[in-house]
Length: 414
Image (cartoon, rainbow, N blue to C red):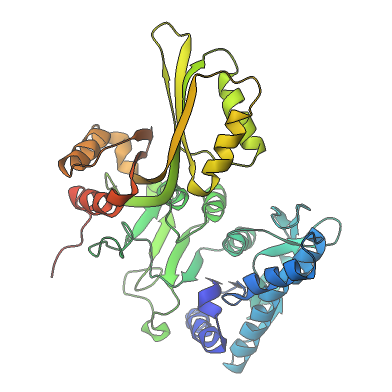
């Protein structure tokens, strides 16, 4: 059971989270808990490091920032004990959770589950700090963005858990953002691949890194809300509760929707290089310097002339990286082109669904639905279970609602 920052923002919320733990313990389950720092605390600790010295040592940064989760873990263990549930907190290094030594963005290399298994088998609930581990140089490390979700999945895999429940401030994965399309509905099940696409395309429920790990390790995830009534128990016939979304292998989903969700990513900038001399290595000449500058490139479309001598290359970067990307390309060696142009303020709309593998015409129907609303498409990219388009940001919400309705994702009235 993993609880994020908003779920443990203060002692009363920790108590609410602990009630969920108590329910599962009383149902006869062996439980391990992974916690994030209280909401806002990590940013505060990061700020203190910057205030102390702008060019601080990354090893000491990790030592400071890792303390946020230790506070939460200790408080959770105290609250559980007060509720009559035997509990003990564990820092990442006490488990131990082994990582490489890339401080601030470490990767987990292995977990020894012996301590946790011993505690759980004797009826205790170990509360583990998320987001951190220990390097082979015996230094505390932090895992970077999405680290606590990743910790939870890794711990679940190590102890061979039946399930990893991710408790957050929403009660599951929705077909799209309910704030944009009020008729969005919660998905009962979604495949790892669909969740991976949704997470990478802008859905904020789970971090991409944790979904990748869950898929690789075969760890079933359930996304649920901490703020549901802990006393409601599990619904009849449901193995994971009254509300929530199970993220699982595609084989566990009997009826596959053609489209499971519509996602929106704002602030996408478009850059076009015209009449680039087409020769071996041209893509490396364009995208190599961008990679060296740590600029993330997303959608890429290339058009080659009839004679094969020149090519136009169009791609997207975040709005925040647009000016930097233009400067990098203008100064790039070994890159010959006639002109470069670009614009900010695009939005990427994507439809995702494993059912797209076996249904032709999904992309064409997407284009038709947008055309009916008078929305112009600037770029198109596709994969086996996803089609994405770039449009003007002013039409973003209209496009999401139109596609959500078009693919029958609106929840039934009444």
